[in-house]
Length: 75
Image 1 (cartoon, one colour):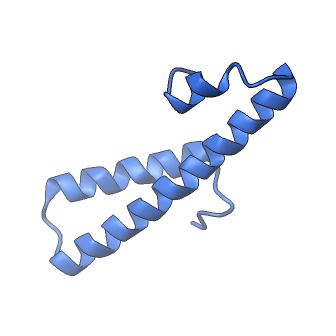
Image 2 (cartoon, rainbow, N blue to C red):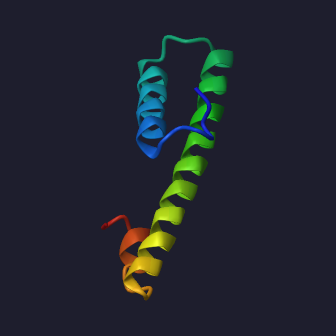
């Protein structure tokens, strides 16, 4: 699955899968590192996707009043 073309929800599901895999702990060190690297990349992509949504909300509302709430994860 390509991260760039994936939706936020797909990326979050994949990230959850990676977390479960790492928590389980029955993978090799190398595979764990590879999964961890993928997870870090997914976090960055999800943060970018959320930032784009925040910017769109600001455009729609005509102001930045919702920005602090989005940045704090309250929206």
